[in-house]
Image 1: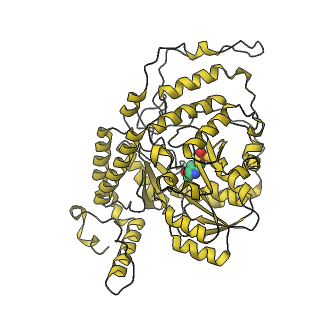
Image 2 (image 1 turned 135 degrees about the vertical axis):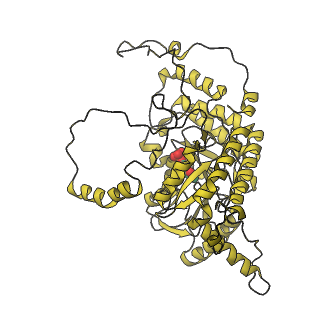
Image 3 (image 1 turned 180 degrees about the vertical axis):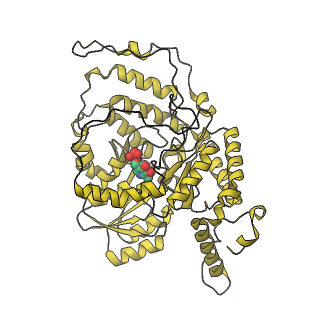
Length: 499
Ligand SMILES: Cc1ncc(COP(=O)(O)O)c(C=O)c1O
């Protein structure tokens, strides 16, 4: 646990173990109370106790069981669409199966940005809720009574965010899908940033609305699209989940208002990390009252398993008809109580937010200096945009050989030729880990030659375009040329200079 959280954690008396926490035994259950092993210590998160750190884990071996077999059409599709990728690109193993991290590994593959997971306040609140869960009915959240912990948490979130209402959902995916299914209608234009999260696109599809993609982070293109297709809904992420780019939200809101559109902002990667008390980018920019709907996953800085959307009073009851809220069960009390405890921690986490932003700045500058093309983003998500899947796997494996673990992203999370290794920072990274990361990336640069990746070439071309536009008499752009990846002089072989 990071130091800032240790400072927040009150000293707690040792409570009874989980095995002693169960209520009245149910004679119909075969083994009750459950027998929990008391002697084996928990293994570090993400490690498989059976596997050696630094090796590949084999799937558990299982006896084959009978299956009726697949249809010819499905077989043909597997052979056509999947097998070439499996054999040629991935070398016969699933792309996400790299090495097994060990306890000393540098983990940049999660979204617990403020390092709250496992905080004693969260854990003890959850244990207490599990003890008292006996009378709880698992049901769809539309049936929850007004005094349920879910509604209490929704009110607390709404007060914190300074919005009229919050509707809690099982995940960020469910929140985005459900909200758009409720607010959009068939054939309505929904202007969606090309890098917006898949769940938003799925919501547009569920509503049978018409997606009108606009170029990533380009308000001028959004304005052109709205002029062409008329008022509808504008959909953006506050921080983009693949590359860590910040949305130019002020400009986007202005364009949406001028075009008579409602606006949805997904704050999954800015809630907790940005704004006063972590209230997000809308709050940081003073835009909350001009944004119609905010959504977020609570599986990022909240490190839980939930999501939410905000709605005005008029939609409070209608929005409870979002399909995931009606046709899927609600969160369990221990999950909600855990989120409540997390909210209290996040409100006090200014030191962690500062640390996270400092780390983002420091590591991004370091990578840029080394020639890695990370200029697309500015925030705590850093994408090593390698391009082809086969090359990206090489980079992922090289990082893991240095004990640095990111997440491999490829289609459908990226374009087919836009695969990347995503590195997510957290306030809990120690100085030693940061230095080890910097050393690893420095050592790898001459081998990986990141200045030759397609993204680096694209960024150089774009920077050159900006430079020419800014020449006297050559256009009106006031933008400074963005930073772009170049090979450091010490790494440049003579023939690379032409790039
Ligand atoms: C921007 C964004 N929105 C929504 C989601 C979905 O969140 P969840 O994992 O809670 O379903 C994610 C997670 O990948 C995300 O990055």
